[in-house]
Length: 126
Image (cartoon, rainbow, N blue to C red; front, side, top):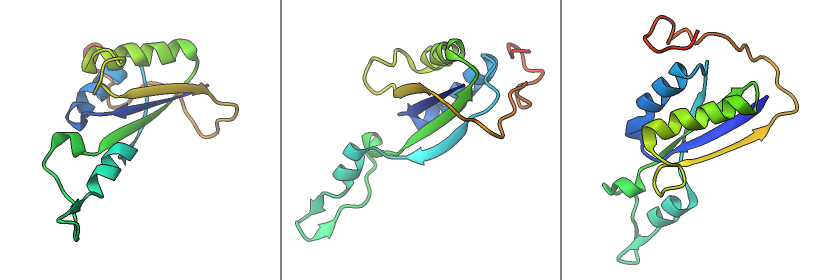
């Protein structure tokens, strides 16, 4: 088993990413709202040196969404990478997100199978 962690830099593409993963046969993911060190430090800048600057309409300051996906083997990790890159573009390019994967030694409670939300959708894996 492997853990795939994908930090989605553009939250507006989340549903497209999830649809692509589902079509590729991924049966589940946990989604967590997250922020990076750069964005958090930028939020702490002081306005007029007295008042904290809490908000911004700058899209670069919006939070991320982090997906955690457990898959059966390294070949499925590659499938996940391909599905995500078809939506967001090459992950080696800036602002497309960050992906990491690592082997898991213990996994309990996971049921691999057909994605129920994708069942019957065109292009969904059996």
